[in-house]
Amino acid sequence: MENIHINSLNIETYRGIKNLKLDRFTGVNILTGNNNSGKTSVLELLKTLIDPTRAEVWQSLIRRPFGASRNISYYEGFIDLFDKSSNEEPKIKYCITDADKKEHNVAVSYEIKAESISTRTANQLSKKRFSTEEKRIIANRLYLTFVYNSQFSNNYQIYEFQDSFDFLLDGEKNSLFHKNIVYVSPTEHAKNYVYLDEILNDSELYPELLAILQDFDPDIISINQYASPNSTNEYCGILTKKFKNALPLNMYGDGMKKVILLMSAVVVAKGGVLLIDEFETAIHTSIMSEIYSWILTTCKKLGVQLFMTTHSKEALQKVLALNSESELKDDITLYTLYKKDGKNIARRLSAERAIEADKNFDQELR
Image (cartoon, rainbow, N blue to C red; front, side, top):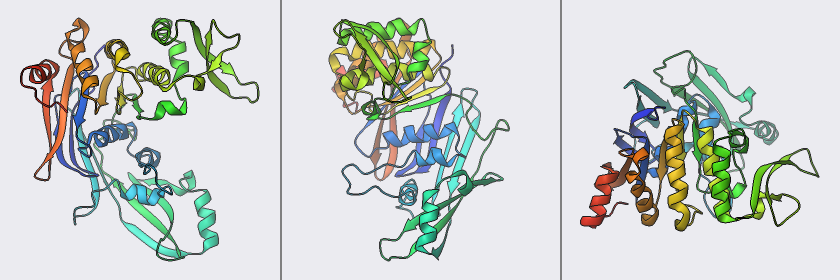
């Protein structure tokens, strides 16, 4: 099954990125680089291919400041998606080419209309913010309504963004890219979230998941969905030889949670694209080779194109070394992102050349 769905990504402007070109994507694409080099931003734009006309897709890109005393508003978060260093009209603009070399363009801009409203009206609107009543799509223009309390006065403001989307569509659907797209954040495993239904229904891949989990605990018998005794909800439980009843997944460490999340995400992304931000998070390097060998080979088998970011040199070396496996030969490519003289630049190396540069020239791959 073919697993190259995106051939290139050309970012004209998004957040702090300007004129970044990434081309000749392969089945497995690893993004490295210093902090603030744009690794996560690349994954975010690929995530928007789910459907750039949906407000929820752009909402999901809002970054909550770690350790901040308050959450930023949707208004502030949306503005942060645009480049603030330029005096030009605020916009997001990028282009992908698919496996057939067809171009798909997205351009997002906004204009703000503000008027003072009463506190009562603001409270009423804020309760249904981003409800379907507050979103209207007319001729590929998306109208969003935000309620924002100014930091500098007690007057509430209502802001209406007119976000114009410029598309080259292949069909009638409001989507550029008719593929599954699954995004896994660095901390998603901590929420005890997994795509369990999909892998439980796969008679071939479920035993492989179980075998890897038994590396964590040889007494594990099965993993399944169980009815919660105190509610109508279900929970992910692991049955072992040590306990009569299945233990909730949250009783286990982050490493096992991350492994289950990633392996189940591969199954969900079948025939599409899997985006993993900071793939090394929570996984000990002693088991990384085994886990990522499974993930990479299964992605190829299921037709999944993989994009991953990392900060860890040791984790990167282990994944690059998988290039020697016959199933993955020439499938792995490394992109190192950096800024030079204010410009965004990407260095592209095949896994073979990256290993050679690291070994013979002690070249920094990150």
